[in-house]
Length: 195
Image (cartoon, rainbow, N blue to C red):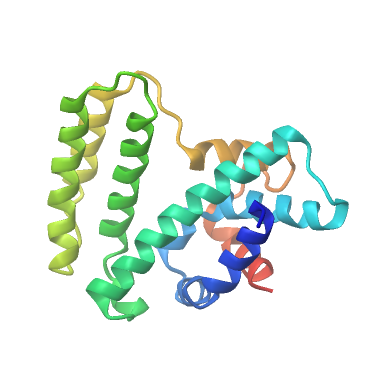
């Protein structure tokens, strides 16, 4: 199988979860709006044209791998902690999004040559703390976002996550306007994707 078939299978396999998150306008899925918009647009372009430029292929693959990994985490949390109840899980969307941000930073750190184990341990310990809130089905206090910022500022000089990169790609491809808010077009983006 190729990555485009993998993406089509992923969309089909995650249809119920994605649709459920969209229906309740979950903040869990809204953080992926730019990435999914770009990936789905490039997938449709591939289907129409039979190919993508090498640069667009890299963007597609990076974006798809990103959402694939995060949706695996979301699906696992949904099943193990919330017994499949999306509405209950969404009550802790802030906590789950914080966990996903931690995963972003961990992945970035692991991709850094000669990364410091001490830095990874800081993130891992912080992840354990956030997981405790998930296990208790509680929202994290806002201060934990500031604490994550403090930890990552010490670790990374310049950090640009996939979401930020995909936002810029969406602008470059004229998929969104700079003034668009993610909430304004989330339904349209994901509604089209689900079709």
